[in-house]
Length: 170
Image (cartoon, rainbow, N blue to C red; front, side):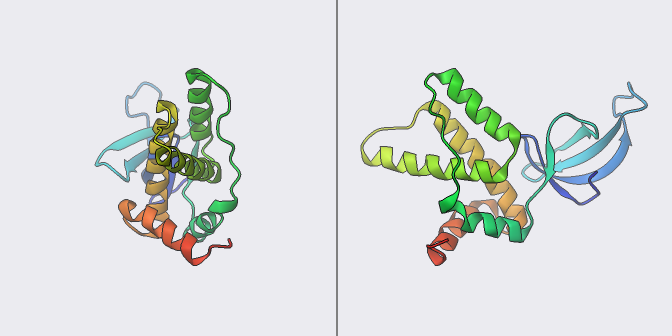
């Protein structure tokens, strides 16, 4: 159970602050079901989520966990999708996001970023599915790391680069 002012990652929607807990069904259709009220970290919108929702919701990383994960980026071993076909890659990356494992997402984003750089240097481009996952994965990670580290989302990438430069043998 989460408490008021806890920061959580809600499925693949992003980072939210718990504004209220144990609320009655906002639609009034189920008097037994209780809800969280969540405030988006990115937008000024609120979401009501059943406390027994099947959608994965987890606490964001602590500052120490985020810093440790960033230092371990070079050794993260998340495999990229090797199956051919748009549907296979789409499913693979969607499942990776939905599982919500921050280290796995970080590892995949790192590997895809390296792959993208390499392809661009050779005058080629990544496929649409990989680009889409890379963009979405970065959005989710920037949002979470931003709250965990207490820095603006647009500064997360430079923070990661500086950390990896300071600790090249992590």
